[in-house]
Image (cartoon, rainbow, N blue to C red):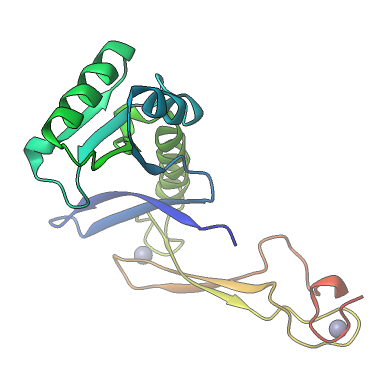
Length: 192
Ligand SMILES: [Zn+2]
Ligand SMILES: [Zn+2]
């Protein structure tokens, strides 16, 4: 089963009572970690993980201290130096390499944050129909759109509920695709 990663960006202003969230969900991540014995192993791991565009981190031990972590490695020279230093500091060769997940060193992460930001922009544009406040917020996704054959509730979206953070106006919006009934292939009873 693929892991689902959540990326979140928020605009928050307490005085205005404004909170707008943008999210993206993805199974795409390049997070990976491996124990290494030498530079060759480190380099092999790094290139598979998208080095040098994707930055690497070299660290010593399972739970390293700050001084035993070398971050933001994006050149072969820097990688070579970090591996050499780490191995010299850890005679037991308890040295690890992992992908740097900080956005500026990680194009995959950056792409995911970009998608969350696009979602945020969509949410800013969605204003409360009553008071026009930006960020009319999705608070519930109700599933259970009835099957077009047997009428049983399916896992398809029945309606979305939005709430205004300013005036508390709540609105239910029917299935966003405009469908009244679900395709039987989503039905747990019919399951064609
Ligand atoms: Zn409102
Ligand atoms: Zn059915």
